[in-house]
Amino acid sequence: MSNDWSMEHKLDDQDLPVGTDSGLATYGPECPSENACDENNFVIYGITGGKQYICYPFVDDGKPYQLKGYNYNGADSGAGKLVEMYGYLGHWGMSTFDLPTSIDDGGQLAAMNLHTTAQGSNTTDVLNSWVFITQSTGGVKLVYGGGFVPGDAWNSIDSIKNMEDVVPLSPVAATQAGKVYALEEKDDGTRRIVEWRRESGDDITFERLKEVETPE
Image 1 (spheres, rainbow, N blue to C red):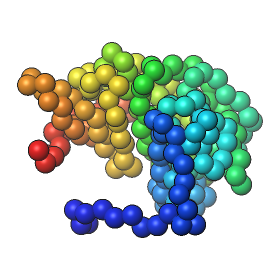
Image 2 (tube, one colour):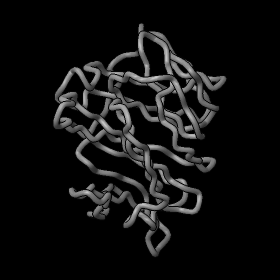
Image 3 (cartoon, rainbow, N blue to C red):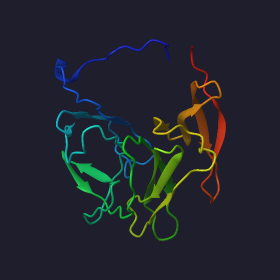
Image 4 (cartoon, rainbow, N blue to C red):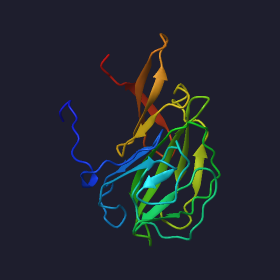
């Protein structure tokens, strides 16, 4: 990969309006089965008036969101301030996410999918979501579970171990390789990107790996 970035093209070669404090989310294929993951690439962002280009429903102006692509079958329902939506043919519906979860004003989101193959009589691919939320007091909250297998429960962790020093309302990013990135503040007051890795096993734990080298 080159160190230089360039713009490929604009949609239909037209300028697209972006709202103040617009969120931006992208999605690409994330698992080996086309039955579980959408094979297309998407970019979604906020325009003025709290609307997302191209689909709906809309989030409030300046609020963050993440885009994850997997097939879903279930009754429409939703609860809490954090909601999960699924898109189909230009429309959005609520998933069965039912865990009341608040997000601090200015909190940022990142998400990863955990892909497994169900055992026993259920041979359908299973894709659970992990949502990372930075908090106004520092640290990172985790909401995890869901997917499209009936009966899957959502759970939450108020503060992820080894991420307590993440600065308040830090930007956060997550990858399908199980890596999470956020900001910590050093003793001299400067902020650095830090990398964590999800550890294997039944317990949900993240190992703090290192500070990411960035140019001064």
